[in-house]
Image (cartoon, rainbow, N blue to C red; front, top):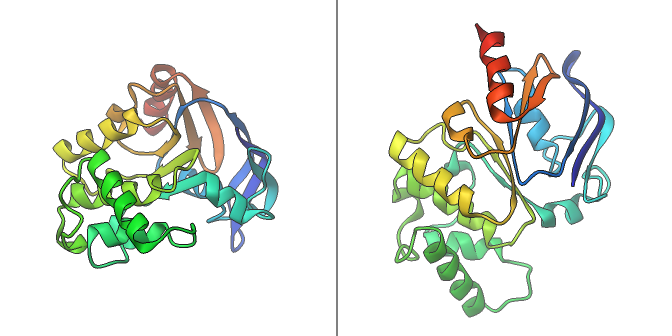
Length: 224
C-alpha cells in the first residue's frame, strides 16, 4: 500500500506539489499531466528520491524519509533514460551489480543475472556491451536490474519517452506480465488501456482520479 498524506513539495519558493492525499492499493496505477504538473516529483517520493516538504509518504507503513533503506528494498525505480542507470560494461555485469550486498557469490550473481535477462527478453546478451544495446534493449536492461531485486513495487518515470513505437509496445508488454504493483508516469496515453486507475495532476494538485477512460477524458479537456 502506497499512501500520500497531505503531501506538498517546494523547489526554492515554488510549490510543485500541494495537498496531495492518495492511497494506492491497485496493481496498475498511472500518473499523467502536463510538463511541470508534479507527476514525476510525486512518483519519486515513493522510494525517497525526493522527500516531501510537507506531509508524508508511506510504503507498507514505512516512511522513505525515515526508513529509506527499508523502502528501497520494496520499491524499484526505472528512469526515462536508461543510460542514467547502466553502470557496468556488459549487460550481465550490470544486472549482477544490482545484487551486490545480497550475500551471494560472484557465480551466483552471474547466474541470477543471466536468468533475469532471459526472463525479460535479453537472453544471450549477458556478455554484450551494455551501451551498445539498442534503446529498447537498454530500457529492458534497466528493468532487469530492478526486477532481479524482486521489489514489491516498480515505479517507471516516462520509460517509453526515448523508444520507438515497436519498443514502446514491447516494454509495456513486459510491464503487463509483472506480478509487482506498477506505478507509471507517462505522456503516452495509449499505453494505459489495461490500467486500473489514472491520476491526473495539474499545477501540483490532483484534479482527476478515476478509471482510465474517465480520467483521461478530464485530462484531454484540461489540455485543450
